[in-house]
Length: 187
Image 1 (cartoon, rainbow, N blue to C red):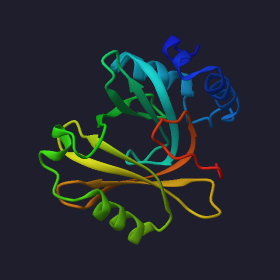
Image 2: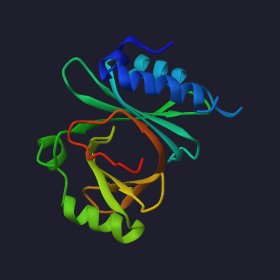
Image 3: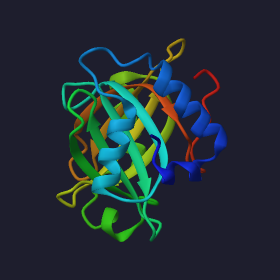
Image 4: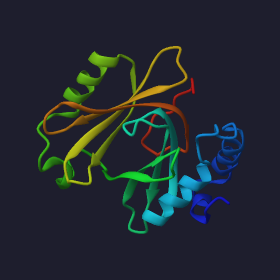
């Protein structure tokens, strides 16, 4: 069953989510359903589900559902759910911009420098940049890069204090879109 908060992202997205859940091709034998990860995310952080991404390559070394939840105070949270076990293995909060105090306090690398690092290493066009606060309080840029002719995107996480690449994921699909996110017509 799809959690009630999901209805807030609209009928079209909910319909898409249901068809992807059904078609996501009944998950392979070693994976749990998206619905189980949505339930796990709601157990950790209640709120409206605003976006779901499926990562075939992730920091957990397993397929992952990245679930973004907006709580009642308007704060957005990003939860990483292992698609094999249903465990939430990472919880981050998002800052609206690099200027927010929680992000800027220890950031030493500009957004432009982070983008340059990501594009130099992986190429591609920037689709989205998110400003994340890790569970330990450190800021990072999450940069989504679309590769020409590819259906997937690289998600490159750059530590905003050191400028180092700290995570790399490959996004296969996304449901939902945040207002400031560019639409990618190729996906």
